[in-house]
Amino acid sequence: MRNWLQKVMMGRYGVDEFNRCLNTTALIALVLTILFKGLLSTVFWLIAITALVYSYIRMFSRNTYKRRAENNAYLTLRYNMTRKLSGLKQRMQQKKYYRFYKCPKCGITTRVPKGKGKIRITCPKCGESFVRKS
Image (cartoon, rainbow, N blue to C red; front, side):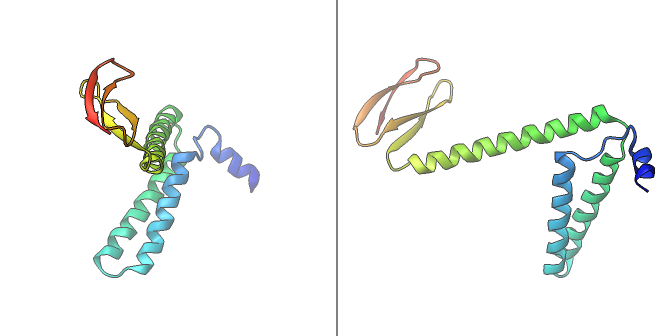
């Protein structure tokens, strides 16, 4: 049986992070199908089936270049989301002691200590100066 499965999977893409995400999404959607009734249950069921079918299509695909590109796009999206969320978490932790301002020229966020009154802030990226109350 194992040899047969190895022969079937020869040259195929297999499982990656995006497949794991699709399978997890399908599992969560199936659990939500059980918890809800009516139209919402049907929507979750369709999401679960779609995620599972797409996962299996990706797993048995021989077009490894396209599957790798999909996985890289997913990993990039996940990295950007986690980076933004961790930045937001750090900002919330520092909110008690610092104020955050965006540079009017380049848009980068600058951190200044609270309670200093009106101060001139110089952007570390573009050198633009602007006055704000801390």
